[in-house]
Image (cartoon, rainbow, N blue to C red):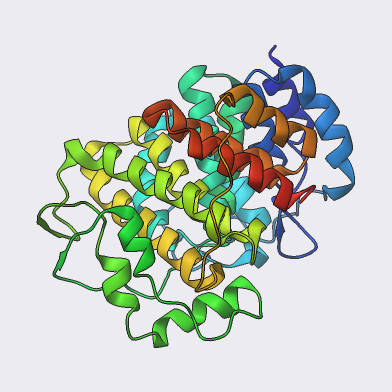
Length: 351
């Protein structure tokens, strides 16, 4: 059994949250560590994270297959959702479960400060590498967490928008007026932000007008990759205000990107739109209006060094952000991504 599967079994009985709201980052961080050749560090990392784990919540009442809508987004039913998805992934192939639930959960992409979709993305990547019982079980837990914390964003605009490249689109995202409180209070302000519908509805592309539901399926992976690239770089210049939370502007769309190979292509356009809305929402909620100079790029820096910085920090957000930055670097060979990753590891620390 691999280190990752052993680690999944260790956290199997832990809940998806601690302290009533904070996400359990262990399943996501250990998958990233294993993915990037740090399997030997997985159990040591878990030992250091053990005091942040809480027991899996118990269910209240079983959720019937045809009565899933009412408990959707009810964190009190987290134990019921965990039990429900244990049954789902035990009774059907995991791809069928994912294909059925992805469109149901996607409108609530803000769930758990986007940790629902991020956790699912890590689980899917692990399954695409190898199908094992612990990995299938982890997918079920990720889907359950997403369902329990399901939270829709203020709706983006409908119609056609002048499409822009992702960096310019992020520049155009407005800021909520009050960035002092938690994410639920911040996201609630989007509905009253006049420029939000246009900013969230204009999926970045370039060169032509594109409707929010008319994305070319063949172009979706590249467009998502462009959003991830831009969000990683923006963390380097704007992460100083809230480095931990702004990480999710990059890791959320990357979770969607790594899930694409496992879901029907008919769902790709909606996935792109939801991923961009999530990136825009996190940016509106946590990015300061003014950026700083980008972190300096060392000419000899390499991906392994960037990941090692994150591992040494022991912080789950640093590890997940480095994982995303390395994904983007593999596509673009842009070393400024590695500099942003190292800088983020220094900013986020053990968080």
